[in-house]
Structures are given as structure tokens and as C-alpha cells.
Amino acid sequence: MKMILVILTAFLFVGCTTHIPVRTEIIIDAPKEIVFAKLVDFASYGSWNPYHIRVQGEPTIGRKLEVRVHRPDGKTIDVPAVHILRMKDNQELTWGGGIKGIFYGEHVFLLENSDGGMTKLVHNEDFKGLFIGFADLPPNVLTEGYHKMNLALKRLLESDNQQTNTN
Figure: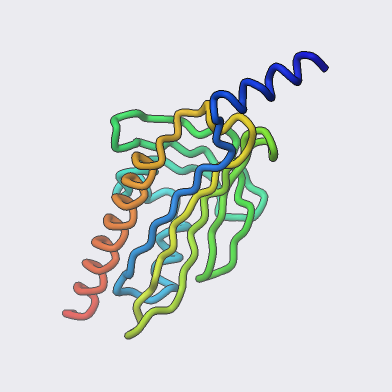
């Protein structure tokens, strides 16, 4: 019991955060079906994605993924034990993992209709738990990485869309 009080006191004095949100979005001139197809095409990530440089696994709920991230600060990280948590065709892809209450994260891609047949990609992550404050998860670096991924996806799909429209 004494140890628990010491740990809780340390959290209070350190001002430990228990939640790190990352929020980004972008409009892509491509239909949701095309955007979703590219998001679940994990094998192609290494060829276009500057942030998630490797994702291996099947896009099926409950399946384990191996994810390697290359952050804008130069760090490359293998993300431990993530699984696909939710997946709705052309609407949502969510992967995540950890121990709820201790250290847990959910990475979410939401697709929404936008004007003119375009797609709004809402790309978020929430890290939660008592030990999140001790993790190397600088929100500004993560946000920059997500923006880079979003922009790379936009450029890829809009380039493909232009080529399709000119043929």
C-alpha cells in the first residue's frame, strides 16, 4: 500500500499526463472507396508512406499487425503488439493495442464524404493510461508524421486520379 501511495504521489508531482491525443485531417480528391483500398493495402505502405514505413498483416478485425514507424525526428520504432480493432468498408480502419488503464493506444482512420466526390480523411490517435506520460510520444512530432502521411496519400491518389481522368 505504501508503494502505491509513493507512485501516486510521484504522478501528482511530476504532473504526469494520462492522455496524448493526435488529430489530423485532409481532403483528398478521390472517392472513399479508393482511399480505403489504399489504407488497407498494407503491402504498399513502404512505397508511398513516409511515416508508417512498414505494416504487415491482414486487414481483418482481430488480426495482429507488425508496424514500423519512421518519425520526423529521425527515430524508427517497431510498434509492439497492435491488432485491427474496427474496420468498416470505406468508412473506418482502427488498429491499436496495449493494456487499458496502463498504456493503450488506438490509431484511427475515418473517411467522410466531402463535396464533389472528394473524401475527408480524419486521421487520429489516442494514447491513454497511467504510464503514457513516461513514453517517448511527443505530440508535435507525431502530428507532423501524420500530416506527412496524409499529404503523401493525397498526392498519390490525386496523381492516380489525374492519370485515370486523362486516359
